[in-house]
Each structure stands twice: as structure tokens, then as C-alpha cells.
Image 1 (cartoon, rainbow, N blue to C red):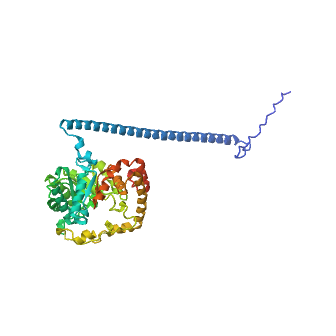
Image 2: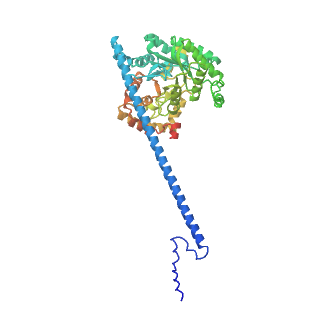
Image 3: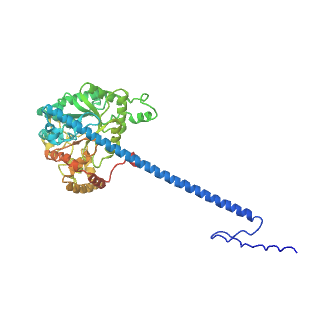
Length: 497
């Protein structure tokens, strides 16, 4: 009898996974399907593990890059701190050596103008010319808005308070400004070595060759300015705006496609200007030259051309700078200063009086915005009627109508609203709004000097105290000013960050 066959054990079909499909019916292809599903499932797991590994690896890479950047920032900060410490140690050592030298020669630092007046002096750009951080400008006032006696009082007050920088131009009051300044300097008899006199050339008269930046006008115009100033030389002569005959944009477009300076084309007037400025310096008619109202591109062109032809490059740019005009001085000029050492001599820190607070309730009768044009024969001096009405000779027939329109515009009203808040901040600091505005300009390390304009000695005396407000501008105060202004300009680095 054959042995009994074992009864086959029937396994229950696999239960379907939640959310999955039912098990395949038994058949010849069941193993094939099952094996393929297993292989695909294991392949998916492998791919997911690989992707997870890559993501983890990229995460670690990102963290390591961040850590490396943080470490580099810390190293740079420590290097800057060490560099600053070494600079302070070196400065202290140099000061001690200077004191020892002066003591041997029976001279003291207490005898210097800087110590006795409290004035701060800075280098004009990367040059060795030391100028007071505050200078006195003569636009509108000398030979026009104020009498010669008031001009003398203003100049004397400025000099006695440590100001050594006095700025004028051949165009100011048709040359009368230089005449008045020269008479006062000769009358006072101050040492020429204690003064820094600057003038500007571009518009010296109505004739075709009495204006522009040609070699002819630069030499003849500076010679005429020296005669009016009764000086042998000026310390800085400025090119007062670029010459419109210079095709600067076309030149830059051509230069951009060329690798070096040797093969670059030379604009005729700009090259002539650079060579003429070098000539007057070599002839002893000026010590340095600079630019005024030039764009950063034009300044770089002049510098490159001077280096190419072994000429003397400009050392500084005169630019408008105040709380409502910031982009050029805070964005464009710092790059030029870093690359080629251009300094900044700024003017109009009170925006032609807008920031003084005098226009909060309209246009005062004796303000600059109320000035009108009167034809005055400058050779015989301002007429009594012109002095009484505070009118001034201007090249523009509209006078200061542009300033009046600016004050009464919608933007002008917004500016006055901000100034009211800044007035409260100035009160907390124990200073006036003009003093805060001038000190705010001085807080910029790229600014070598700020030119002041004044028509009264009381006004100048008040503005001179801005030097004492400068130490009060802490980081928190400057941050509050930025918040109130809301117009901080952004450069390329700010956009990249």
C-alpha cells in the first residue's frame, strides 16, 4: 500500500497594502510580476537613499561654506583691528617723537593753531595739503550780497577760529569776489604759508576764448585771477565744470573695447586741459589742481590721461553735499578715492539755506530764495540800492527763482517735515539744526573739507561750532538720522549683498 501523500498547505493570499492594489491572481506570471515589483521597490529605495545622501552632503557643504565665510570675516575683522591698533601705536610714537623734538627747540604743541582753536585739519585727498575741515566760500557774498567791511569781518572771524581754506572763483560776482578777497588778505598781512587759497576757472568773460578749459584760457584766466587776488600763486586751481567741447562719452565707448591706455585715443580738449594744468603748476602759479562738478567718469579720464602722458593728475573734486544730496559723495567718489586718491571738498552743506530751518514758514524777505537780479557795475562796487535789497549779480536772468520753486514744491514740503523731526534731534544733542547738518557732512571720512557760506558773523560763529558737535554723532544718533531722512543711496556692493 503506497504511503499517504502529504496534504499541501494552502497559504492565504497576501493582503493588499493600505492604499495599494489587490494581490495578483495566481498563475504562471505571478512570480515574474512579484519579482519585478520587488526590484522596482528596492530600486526606488536606493534612489531615495542616494538623493537623501546628496541632500545631506549638499547641506553639509552649505554649512561648511557658511562656516568658512564666517571664519574669513572674523579673520578680516581681527586683521583690521590689529591694523588699527598698530596705526594708533605708530601715531602715539610719532607724537612722542614730535613732542621731544619740539621740547628740544623750546616749542610746544599748545602753541599750534589746531590746539588753540580746536579746529580739525585733514589731508586734501591723498595729497600732503592739510586743510581745515571747515572752509569759507565767497559765492554770492563777497563782492555781491555783503559789503566789503562785512566780508572782512567774516574772513577775520574764520581765520581766528582756525580756518585756513578760502575758496573763490573767477565767475563769482564777475571777478569782484576775488578782488575783495585779495584786498582783505593784503590788508591783514597774514603769512601766505598759513593760508590755502583756491579758485576756479571756466567762465571769465563774454568773449569766446574767455571761457572753457583750453590752454589759452587756463593760463590767461589764472594769471588774471592772481592779479585780482594780488597773489603769486593759488594752492589749488579747479576746473569749474567739464568743457562741453570734450567728447567724453564717445571716448569712453572707444576705450572700453581696448585693453590698455597706450592704444587709447586722446580727446583733444581734455588732454589740453590736463597738460595746461600741469603747466601752470610747473610754472609756480598753482600747487595742485582739481575738478568741480565733474562726473566720476570724467575724473577717471583725466587721471588716466595724466598717468599716460606723465602729467599731474587732479587731487580732489568739489561737489555739492548735504542731507538731501548724497549719491555722488557717498557712492561715486569713495570708489575714486580708493582707486586714485581723489578727495572731496564739498559745498552747500545747508542746501542753500533750506536745511537752516528758515523756510519752515515760507520765504523770508531777506533769504537767498527772495533774491532778485540787479545789474550792478562791479568796477564801482555794489550800489546802495542793491545792498539795501540784498540783490546780487548772477549769470542766470532768473536769479534764485529755482530755489524759491524748490522750497515751495511738494518735495520741498516733505523736506521741511523731515527737518522738523531733525530739529527735535538737534535739540536733544544740545545744538542747532545747521550745526547738526554740517557735523553730519563732516562725519564722512571721505570729505576733506566742507565749505561754508555766511552773510553775517553771528551765522558763521554758529556754524563753526559744528566741529564741537561732531563727537556727539554716535552710531545710534547717525542711525536715527538715517531713519528720519530715509534717502540713503546704495552702491553696487549694497545691491550685491
